[in-house]
Amino acid sequence: MKPRILLVDDEENVLQAYLRVLRGRFDLDTALGGETALMSMRDRGPYAVVVSDMRMPGMDGVAFLAKAMDQHPNTVRIMLTGNADQGTAMEAVNQGSIFRFLAKPCDSEVLGRVLDQAVRQHQLIVAEKSLVEETLKGAIRMLVELLSFLDPISFGRAQAMAEHAEAIGAEMGMENPWVLGIASILSQIGILTLPEGVASKLHTGVYLNSVERDLSNRIPEIGFDLIKNIPRLEEVAESVLYMSKNYNGSGYPPDGKKGEEIPLGGRILRIVWDFERLLSRFGNPIATVRDMEARTTWYDLDVLHAFIRCLERKGAEPPPQVTQEINLHELRIGHVLLTGIETVNGLLVIPPGTTVGLAHLQKLRNFARLSGIREPLVVTGG
Image (cartoon, rainbow, N blue to C red; front, side):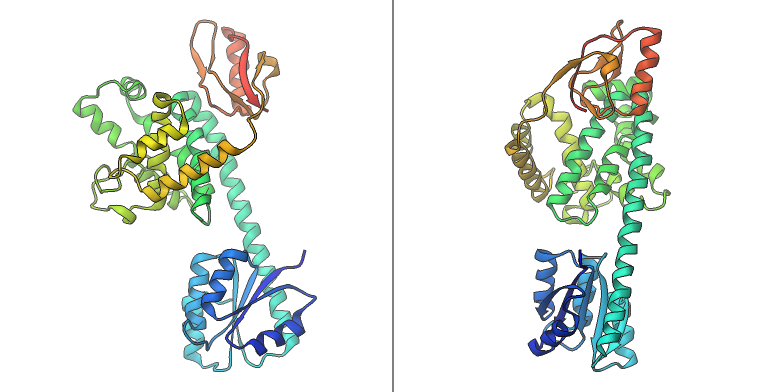
């Protein structure tokens, strides 16, 4: 598959000249001017490389490439200009993180060689991003499996939150929606610091006294403090910090931020966390979010409406995989528990909604040897 490249200039004849010398080597699109190019990047992207002229009416090359960097950071940016003075070059590099700066007219062999280098740079960026993403996801998945043994209810909910949060992030065009999945899962890490009695009250909705309420209000702050020093998880930590913040600025942390000043990740977690807690009351997902919609001061309605669209699309998809009743020895990684797994004495080992991982299987085998597991197990997937 040929690399996709966008060529941007305000002169049609220049764009046609690029096409003549580069066609065959790359998958090429053209755009007349910066504003048209941004729409093309939004609607027809992603592009590996974008090549832009400097001097264009309206939005010049510096402004265009700066916006391109903000909206599509993985796309490698090259600038061509007939006015290659030092000040222009410095401004372009500083504002648009330019990979190469070339003077016009540019020899076709030089341009082709630079494009090859830019494509390789894009491949490195994408490969590094994928490596970081998969490494983080794998490490967090293992951590959560272990944490779910300490508090199966909280981390069972966190797994359900993760799927919804990532779907909302993708619906809203976030560059890295997977960050929200990690934030959802780690959002409950602060609850492990609560005394056992307070955590139980929090799960069951029992009245909390003022001291217990203060402890529970600090759960996001504790999570933030634990996560913030992990490299590349700064955005995750910030999302967790603001997951109890209402859209009108009330709630925690009491720092005066409100509306869109609250990080988008925090606004999304606010919604999916309340959704998971309210779902058992209403039963139906759409009925749950419609009830939430009435609380206009609590939630960002743009986020909530994005969530509604995700849920409606999911409802239009083919029915879920068939429910199965199986014995413990048939349980596999990837099965989703439709009911909790208990010992024969009634102790909850793994809550409903959990996606079974390797650590869950080992834990169940240990419990089966010591005290026995109630069978059959009700699952789907796998």
